[in-house]
Image 1 (cartoon, rainbow, N blue to C red):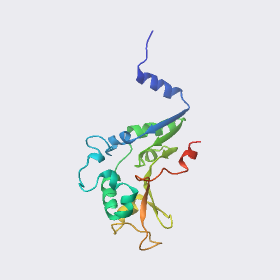
Image 2: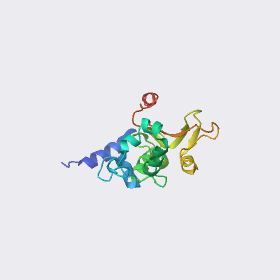
Image 3: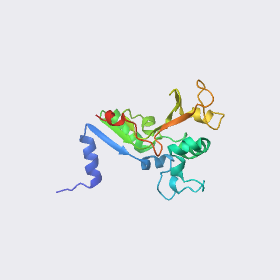
Length: 184
């Protein structure tokens, strides 16, 4: 009797499945050059700003009280505009192209699953690819944040005092209410 190892069992299960749900986190994007949060080289161990911890700098309260510092940190440590999907992201998109229904639920905000071609992606914490005006809710692409000549990007329609913010869940904020309904 030949026994399958765990990798062979997983491969067989994927081959036989019609519907697959994948849960991903920071580790899947590390090969794309995006550091995780908790490893020795991760974001939480970055001592670049001794006065504030990274957790504090990506919180809603910090966004409100130190918006210019938030954007400095966000643009330098949270957004990787040159990152490309890696083999893992592409693998899940290829399974979909092969006729399987693949749902990806991710904690990542990098948008790499969508960039790879997966169509059913649930981004628990939002994505850096979307940004919006806090007054009128108008949407702005990722590059708008970087092309802004102001330290805090503002909405051209709402003018001074308006802020563009990333469509990501910051510490101290709840997950979007409509997320659980999307999985039904």
